[in-house]
Image (cartoon, rainbow, N blue to C red; front, side, top):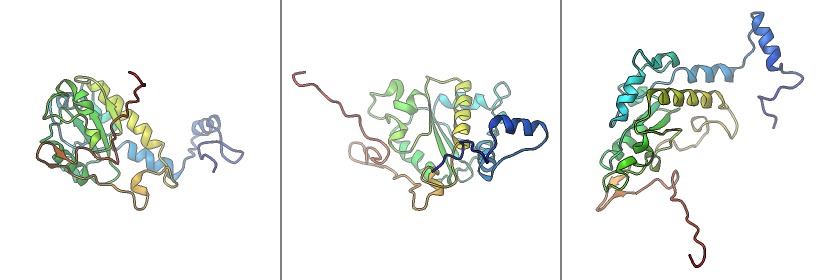
Length: 217
């Protein structure tokens, strides 16, 4: 199958499109317009966990102005948001609530793991009560490292997400899950077991790394 992004004799090149644009003629497609609108109207959920949430709040202030990217609308309800920013330490007591919020968000939806704690547990990794990464239960689109990351890092992640959305196809095997019939959208919510969360991970999303040891080591 031919890549739609590859120009042929029938489709104009980038230089030809730029020349037509200078003449007041715009060439586009339904897919480009659709993804352009989606990428510039990403609404985050008004939700924070710990100190990284302060950096997330700062990104919406005048100095950084997340409104430049169309994401100034922080929605108080997960049913009106399409971006979950997991900003801060995820305790095992809070993990089921985060997964519930994710399941209540409509498709298409995206997730940022903001800060070392949300990515891997951070400085509290060895604590019995801290989840070692939210990607054990929900899919993460962008990881934002740092402790805490700066607001500029969050804006950079948002630009990376916009680029990802603009590159999505409306049809075919590479289409996003919400456009594929039968694709699972919800994640199982962990429950409190006798000693830990049950299940301890979502096997469809995360598997522990396999250590290959040499003989005699």
